[in-house]
Length: 307
Image (cartoon, rainbow, N blue to C red; front, side):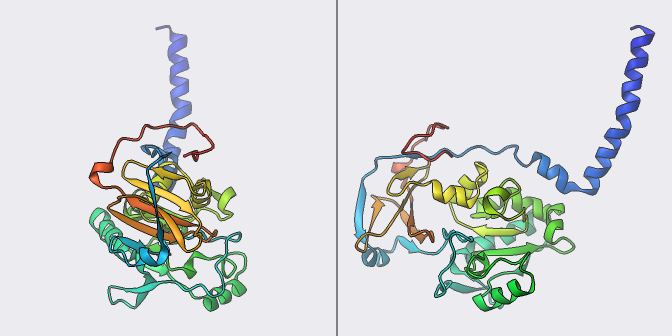
């Protein structure tokens, strides 16, 4: 190697070494930066496609009597375009006799998530803000209209979401903690999504909030997380009346017509939730005999959402 080439390599090394050291120090002091740079890695897109499985027409009254059918509020879309009605009532229950209330559909899932955080990170998960009634939301909005959401457009009124933290790490700093990174990367496994992700501000209208988790259940949380969707994109891409399937679930979004819903036939269990757009989501968990591999596709057709 010529002396000139050696000097050039040495010069490049001397130039880049401080840059590398500074970058390393910044990432050490701000682990959330490193997390955000790599957070898209390892996500495997969940395929979903339309299907022709037979649908059975059942009245809502009849569905409510069936043991394998659960009605809940898990798929409500709440924002300034889809606001809650003034007479909306959240279906709430107490969390472990703690005096903390949340929507009944998330009680078990939050218990599992909280336990997982402690097991995986050693931290105990706390709730800084949970369910709020319309009166409290109005007061918060009057006090700080730039930060608080207008009453009727806040998910906190449903009890489906919560702002979480661990000791020493809250708000924007939550993502600097192991617990924050765990929830942002694995919360979907327990049915929770980051409602306002770093890639979705143009759609949600709300900046990245890594501490604000929202329950949607399965398979919705997996699909939203792995396909990097916002809740708005996910819900509104389902064409009404078309039945879709993943490997283990059937999903159909439809309106109630004359008190009747069409449900995928022969499922192990069903979860039925309004979505606050005038439609209902019916999520049917397949029996073992109904499970098949879904071929991954990115084609967009009239019958298929672009997931």
